Length: 112
Image (cartoon, rainbow, N blue to C red; front, side):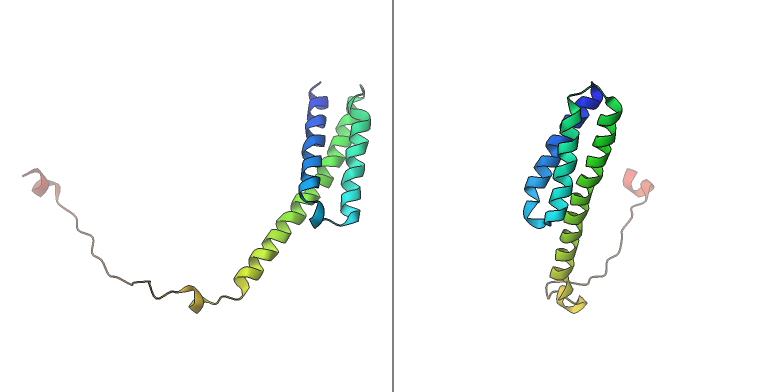
């Protein structure tokens, strides 16, 4: 029962991830995930727990590829946004260098 529930949850989360990332994926990537979802759906209502586990693992692998691709695209976008700035561009005129001295009170003076 536990594996069936996990399989159904995996189907749901994978379908949601696929829908959310649909425009960022190639047809081949979408097709691979859709096929893995279909394969798991075909066995999740059955009693073959080994098959459910096998199909769940396959879908997990395909779904992980979506996450990896989205993460990589996010990293690439972040690097492109930061790429044009040099260290001089990052230091603004509102930065103030200051020297400071830490003042410590002796415990004896504080108790008097």
